[in-house]
Image (cartoon, rainbow, N blue to C red; front, top):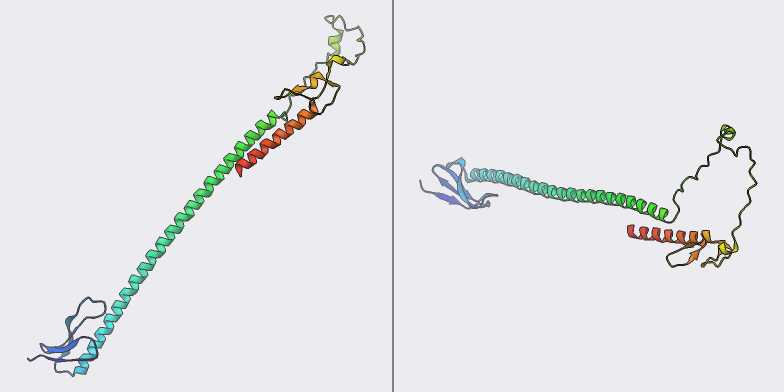
Length: 217
C-alpha cells in the first residue's frame, strides 16, 4: 500500500502505514521523535486520526507534568530537609555552647567564692576562735583540803596601766598614746593602729573584689 502523509497543526507528521494511522512526533518528556501507531484504521478520516493524536499528546503532557511536579516536590523536600538539618545543627551548637557557658560560669562562681573566702580570712574578717573558757572552781573544790588558799580572801584586782615606755605612735594617722601591743607592722615597715589597720584591710579586700569582678566580665 502506498504511504500517504498529511501535515497537521500538531507537531510531527501523520501517515498511513500497514493499514492504520501512525504519528511521528517527539512527545513532551521525550528526548527524540519516534513513530507510533494511533490505533485508527487507515480508511478513517484524517480528522479522526488527528483527534487520536491530540488525545495522545494530552496524555503525554499529563504524564510529563506529573513527573515534573514529583521532581519539583522531591527537590523541595530535599532543600527543606537540608535546611532543617542545618537549623538542627545550629540549635545543637547553641545548646552545647550555652551548656558550656553555664558550666564555666558555675565553675567561675565557685572559684570566686573560694578566692573571696581566702581574701576575707587573709584580711582578718573570718570567724574568730571562741574565747578561752575559764574554769570556775566549785564550792566543793574550794572547801577541799587540797586548796590551802580556799579560806584566804583575794585582794581586789588593780587595773594595770601601761608604763609610758609601752605607748607608741601610729605612723599612719599620727595618733599617740597607743599601746605598743596594739600596733602592728605592715609590709612597708610602718606601725599602724587597729583603726588604720582595719581601714587598710577593707581597702585591700575591695581591690581584690574589683579584680575578681573584672576577670569574670
